[in-house]
Image (cartoon, rainbow, N blue to C red):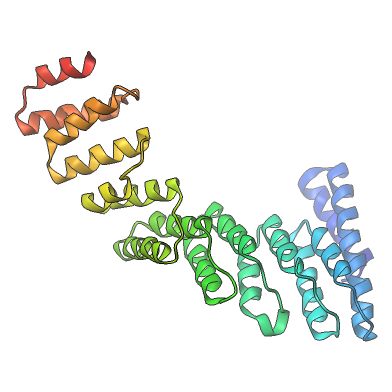
Length: 285
């Protein structure tokens, strides 16, 4: 599609969706992308040298999926030419895909290194995983992590592990929970200290899977209200009501105890046979 045809197509679509000014702005952006693509394609056809900065400029101007489709064609043409990409091209490509809401296309193209030659950095992979999590596409978020660890030159960071573990925990299946625990152990072997919020995520998943021992292990050493709530919940699952009550008493000194937690405590008190009136007075003091 030529620059003028892209301008006309985007202008008409903009009129239908957002009014004249929005249509004009969108059409101008599309015209820029269309013209940049036409210029690059002409050089590819003539087998002329293309600067990586020109390809990056096209990617930076992508605002719609149609723009990104043209950029993908340009990336493929750039790969076939004698031109050399910049190290930043991979990151620019990932940003463009996430900006237009097409991380699945980015993942597909990253896998086909021979045809496209896109090599994202660690932050680029993390960006794709974040986008998949926003879209609640947990399977592709995990596939992105798997693709990253296949690359020997890229070492996952604590943030990378957090995003992958979060995706696994959000799926709420036993197999995915087990793999999340395995990733946590792998990070330890790789000398990567997990983020505090990763420990919270794993502990919450352990509670949902009725695995209280793992929950308590994951929040060991964390002094937050959320961690305390998870520990109380885990102790209750174990049936250790007296420890759950004592923990809540200790926590109530530093944190405001939610009403829901208090209700759960009183139920645990009744089930354990402890004097509920005495406990309630102790908590309220």
